[in-house]
Image (cartoon, rainbow, N blue to C red; front, side):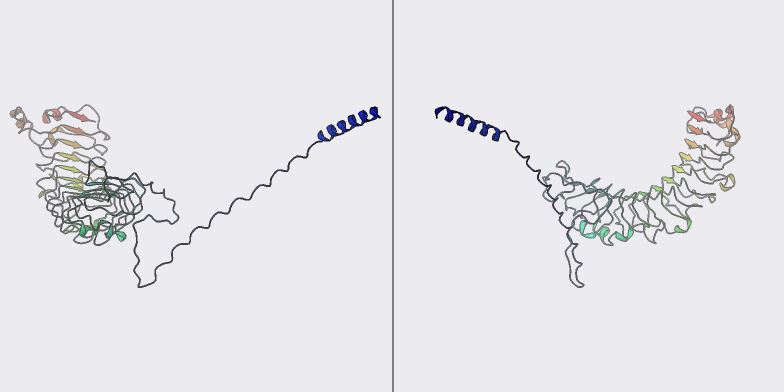
Length: 393
């Protein structure tokens, strides 16, 4: 009986071991959970009912666009009125830097601002409300935006009655903006699509010294005798890169620099520069000027120092004043030069007053490359222009 109990105990032990060594079933992998549903985009606000006023905050538009998003707001400024999308340097309390921020609208400008930088953005409009309290602004840079005439508020420049410098190059203007303040000293409107200058656009700009209209779509029919009326202080006028075939009827009499490069001008009226007693720099490169289109003595202007006539159709060197210092005639059709003919005064007179700089021609730089000239340079050229430092052939 004892022996049988011992055998039974061993069998129970073996049965337990075998049961524990049975292969346990693998746990089933959990089913992948479905991704959460994205929330639906908010519905656009309903337009206001007619007759009800609706306050519009100066926030960036939320419509779909391919333009880069506005840059995130910067750190808090020491000036509580500083727009978060701009910079207000503590060292320059009168300056507001909102340039190159991908802005679509003009922020509300604080009253303390004199210098406003808004260039290199995507601004399309100049609303009056943005400048309502900014009556002390003297300088605005709006270059390289998307501003059109239709979106310039009629009252905005009436507020800015202390503005001295207005830069609006590279926008979408098709005409000179109206109601410009009489305080303006510099107006830059280059690289737009300006094809018209409304009557009286400059009539009140008595303080304007610089007018830049180059690289637009101006043609001859835009200009008349009154176009520049009122510009009593104008010193620099830039009409280059337009579609002019003839000179404007009248140029302001105090002009100092006149730029007319890259037009299609074929001729200049006789005595055109006679009344311009301050003209010192004249650029007429890349036009269609010929010898027949330049009256004799046209450039014999005592104040003229720098004359550019490159890339035209000239066959000879026009007459010029003894005071001229730089003459550019490259890339014309000039085949020969005669020093005696182009010398502003006789060689005998120059020899007699060789040591008197007031009596000899002052030409220092002469450029003739790109013509059909063959070396050497005639000796009478050097005998006439004794101050000549460089001649490029």
